[in-house]
Structures are given as structure tokens and as C-alpha cells.
Length: 281
Image (cartoon, rainbow, N blue to C red; front, side):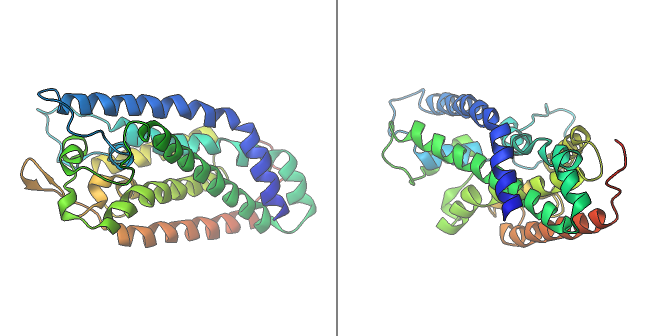
């Protein structure tokens, strides 16, 4: 607990500016959302103002999975990719830096390497949790002044902006897809990122994470967990241009991601037991 408390205070303080930089980023996404909404109502007056839930669905929507087509321009889902990778950027190189600095003294003088690694995992969980809480709070602050319907999602607007057919889903599907899956996927990727820093430099770990998360855009697989963070892929029976599209099971995804976190925990413990703490970088 002492190590975790130190890591949370020190790590978050070192990365405090990253949380501030996230604010204009979210505002840009919000104005992009408003532009889409204005285009939707371009042939008539606004029937209603978009709600908090409408914006969240747009922010975490991702992209409908389609087979590669040489005649269709490929587009990266920027908002989805940015939020997922920014969560890793929030963690930064703090775990690696601590292992080669103050943490090295702890690892040399004590036999509790497990405690050191657990503290870094808790630091990653708290850091990403704060980032996603920041996203949801800012989304609330920018949408509530224009719409009092906080948790009301408008099916026509959501279908236009996010390719999601709400009439085919329950409230559980909706809230799980918005408030659980993007955050849990980011937490799992964060644990993988911390684990990789035991093996390679942080920059290489960040690049490896980026390549892996991009694979989720190209392929639909339960082993590519980035699919679970896209609402249009983890809400079942999505359609696009009249066709039913492939999707993943978010209920299974929760267990898969929790299992991944446990695997990273066990693998990190094993590596630290065999680690040469005096080895020069």
C-alpha cells in the first residue's frame, strides 16, 4: 500500500500536464460531433439537442468492421484510436524509470519484487481510471448546458452519427458498451504496456501497443481486444447499409480482458524473480 500510494502520487504528479492536454482534445471531438449533428439537421430545424449519452456513443463508437476493398478509401477511427493510445501515454515511462532509479534500490534491498510490480499495476489502473473519468466529466459539462436529457439516447441521431441501432439493444447493452468496455480495454492495454516495459524500452512498448491495437481495426477476433472497446462491434446485431455485420460478445470480452490482466500479473512476477537488477541499460 505504501508503494502504491507513492507511485500514484509521484506518477500522476509527473503526468499532470497530460491530463490538462486531454481537455482540448475532448473539446475538439465534441465540436466534431456538433458538426455531424448540424449536418443531420441541415434540411430543417433542430427537433432536439443531442444529449450526454449521444455524445458518449459518438466518442466511443469505433468503426464498423468491413472486409478490405481496394476501391474504398481506408479511414482510421481517429477518436477511438486516440482515446485508447492516450491512456497509455498517460502512464508514460514511469514504471521503467522507477525500476532503473529509486525502485532499483527497493528491488535490490528487499525480496518483495511482487509488491513493486503490484504497485505499478495499481498505478496504471488509477491513472487510466482518472483519464476516463475526466473524459466522462468533460462530456457531461459540455452537453448538459445544451440538453437536459442526460441519459436519453436519440435513436435516429445515434444511427446517423454512430451506425448503431438502439432499438435492437437493451439498456444493459448500452451502458456496458459506453461505460465499461472502452475503459476495461484501456486498462488491459495499460497492464500490457507496463509488462512490456519490463522487457523493452517504453518507446518500443508504446509502438508495439499501437500496432496491436491497429490490428483490431483490420481484423475481427476475440483475441484482438481493441474490438471490445468499439461500441459498433461489441453491441450485437449491428447493421450497415442493410447488412448484418460481424460483432464480438462483450460479456465474454470482460472475462477475456480480466484473464489477460491476471496473465500479465503472473508473467511480470516470473520475470522479476529472474531479473538482473544490476544489469546496465
